[in-house]
Image 1 (cartoon, rainbow, N blue to C red):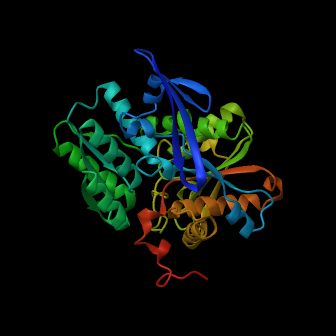
Image 2: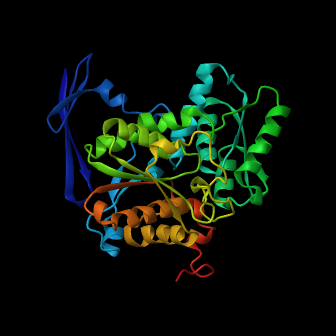
Image 3: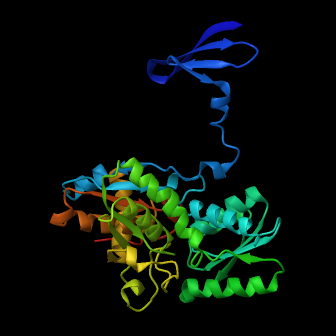
Length: 357
């Protein structure tokens, strides 16, 4: 048996004291008086990045809420804390795991997916870890940062006509699938695993981390998986949770309007996805492009938080809700899908060439 203590210095004059008692087996380490097995500490070391997906933090947007004089702070679900930087890490992992379980995806096969960017990043991460070849089709309007990031992660990129939106990318993906033996399209716009991933993880995290106090949930709609999956989870706990879907005002297809080009990358797919379930959505808020961009800029200037354009749209919609008397003192949770670092070349941070009044 070997007994001893170790003092670790930290900045600002802080010290961490750890006492160690070693014998043949087991080994116990005492941290602040609590004995833990060395095997328990090892269990905290992830085998790969897929084990770090989820359990993203909630944060009060105190600065943003104060700027607009809101009675209660909006709460943000920060999905940029996922390992590949967005909410789509959850979906990518869930869809690949499901395809493997069904036998649809064979070892070393090619995965093809139409994506506006973040799903592609998540898929590229998971495909690299699991040894799959990945081909992504996306509109040419997607940011340069996203394209370069996808290439860095080993994905092959095929750009499609920006005016055709995601519909054009989907058509190209099907064309490639038919030409490549054994290729699989995971079909995020149709795949039930998309919404289930959020029902089983994101929604439960929000309910648990708010101690069941969430009253309103706000999220943008790309595939519809996030808002519908989270809605199902929250409404199972409390049917009165008010769920709000956000879409581009210039392409209001969820409300029955005409599709059109817009600047809010990641939402507004110019059609209604089959996994979008209108029955669990209580309201749709259309957000103008400039308000989404303004919201993203204000998150940076008031919170020090770099978030994407669709995050700006979500927080703008959340603010409109918080200004209503019936929600003024309620907890509103807005999901912020990704980081602003993926939009540095877009209008989001083009302060000189794209000023806002």
